[in-house]
Image (cartoon, rainbow, N blue to C red; front, top):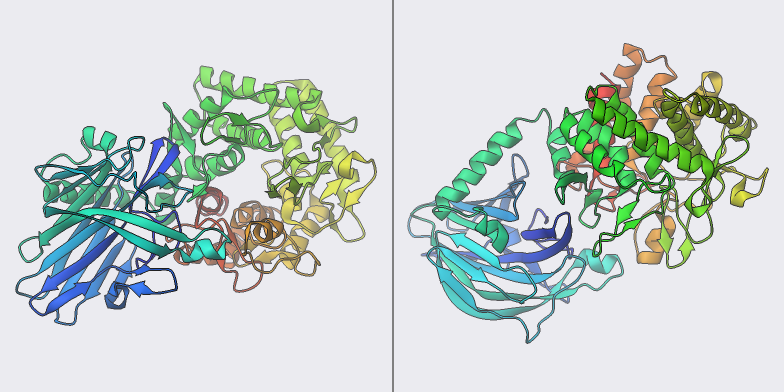
Length: 615
């Protein structure tokens, strides 16, 4: 992960960043490179770094003539003497390695490339600083160089068609601009053991980096240039097989966990989260034909259902499951039901049905965090200090949007889950009918023609939260709509009028005094605004599905929705995380993408719209 001009601005920007215990144990290993080209007319930088005080050195960014991310990140630099150099980068799936290739595409005469790796062996959330413990020692074996900077961090292996010259040095005082904007530490030191030189006039320069484990598994086997060329050729073939850029992007979120498979919620800082996994599964896996992946994920999660709940996440260090989500299990049921529509294996069907029954049984009887079906059939949930819904921002002990009581989308999901379980068990079908009747009477705000966001707030009977939020759209945009007719149309119209933007729905109407038009600042400021104004693109899935549904699902409605809603969303894949969609955007125009640049459920729900809902 990095920037177009090559200047690192985040602690997560790195060339080689490996999950040492997939998908966890993520370590930055090779943070950056210092790169120069030497010709008879001089020495010219291709790299650039920002240092403390705002100084940028060297000046490689000023020579950048072009950049594209398709089919992979490719830069071209124009030198003053007419030489032109192309740089390419590929990270192949399935191994902790990266391949780089530099080619002179214009110019004649002598040309040497000089590359100095800048190392920062550290946890990806941390920063690296000069210290006496860092070991610069290098082991050279043919075209391979191995560094083991710290005994408890994986070794780094480089393979190249260049010559290595040992020359230890510290590069001090890098400034990471985005970290400063986020109110976090922003200064870092990087260590460089030595430099590699290449004869660019003779052949392209090839360089591969890998962890020691990946190198032992063959990631860097063969002569360096041939190995890099094979890597690029294989990646070209892999990428050409996808129907769209977004369909290829979906693959980045499907990763290994132990012997199984899971979904990363987003990059760079998220791991796998239950809620995000099940919201994303229909788009990432089922819409794109990855049914085997969907099967593996669902069956793996069947084994961790506890007292009706699915874990929301696993601790990054201990892998201990954390049960602080009321909707993760309900989204599991939605995803499982979508998969079961085409499942033929009796054992798979039985395992998923058992998990579904365990979820509704646990929720109906009562489980953690006061999650329990009330006498009206609706699902109540929540207690002070715990964030249970997808609006889960928390700063210290302060839950920003607690939504304790009976949240609207939780009950729409609950009714859907009961209906799915009711296909095999009559008592759940009866409870679904009771809950749906109660939903219609309890949540409808007749005065404003919309749905309340929460009823029985803080478990106090009869109280309501009338905040205009997009959560109400799930009453119309889930597989089983829980309201219909004029009320459904009114809800969709309200969300479109007060919340919709070209990037998706806002989380709060801009007339609300709590509305945050821009997302930014330190942790408290960011968390306070996280669900109080920013646009969340993933919500577009339910909104557009509901919008088409209340118009009868006609071809004309789908065509209009594609032009009106989907095409602007697809256009935003070129704005931030290139080829992907971001986690959130500013609530105020022009709806700047922010948060995590690469977000699974944003990509998944827009894919689902493109490949399923609007077909």
